[in-house]
Length: 450
Image (cartoon, rainbow, N blue to C red; front, side, top):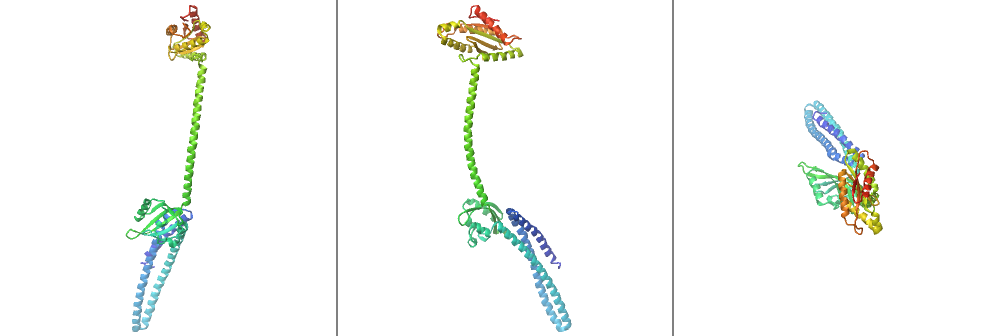
């Protein structure tokens, strides 16, 4: 090639090497179902690369045409010179004409060869471009609009999904497929983006000719002139109506499921409330039963079983820590006479009144129990024998002065003792019982110590 043509053909080869892989990449993306990536690659890289190939071909053609014109001028000049020399020198002129004709013919032959080769490359590039356009049309909804948004091109998928004939779409504004689903601000933002020369991506709900709605993912690419202003817009869309319908169905099912969950939750809450009530009721019942198990039903104070358990615990604690522990036992003097004279109901009332009176006179940590019949016991942790004797005397005097309706005068005899190391329950209780027996033997209504 002449030196001035080499850079042009090198440029063409470079542009072709760049455009070819991009075209193949677009085809591979389309074949693998990745239409959105294919659209973006086609618009942002493949089409600009193809335009550069066409531009390089145009430069070569312009250069070759220019050379052809120049060669034609040279040939005319040579022809005139040949005629002149033919007249002058005859045979020499004929030789020169033949040489000139041979030179021109060879140059024209090279030019034609280059044009044929360039034309073949251009046809291949155009064929690849047409194939990519067909692939794009088969998988996407494509339209082209002018600067005003009026449709100048619509592919078959646009016609099929919109329900409009091609002649009904061409020349119309894209507002023809607006569904009314989106607010005006949606379209204002779209239009502001593309008129500023930027690509717009989004999901749009359109309306077909028959009034049905369809959803598309849309990419709108503005093409700019030399002044940087859009002169046309290419829109590439993909139908996602089925996806949106599935989303709506899932949303509806989600709402139904949430309602069912709320209803079930309410039922469970009611059941849980009922269960909790039953648990509390059973706890109260168990507590009541436990109370009955350790409470004397007549007087409401602790019974013998609770006293025995507390006695074992307090003796163990006193033995471990060396703290004092006293026991006070007493019974009602001549209680049998009260029952015989006034009746058992009055006798029960005396026991109840005595239980309430003593409960109000002892400490909270003291354990007061009905030991049996008219006999009672007080277990006093932390109290020595001296303190226990004073407590017994206070109770004795208080009972003697207390009013017992319908029973007349009531007195009690008391026996007190203190826990000693080595004691067992029987020995501890026996000492208090011995002291009580002595108090009764010595005249009743008195306190004795053992």
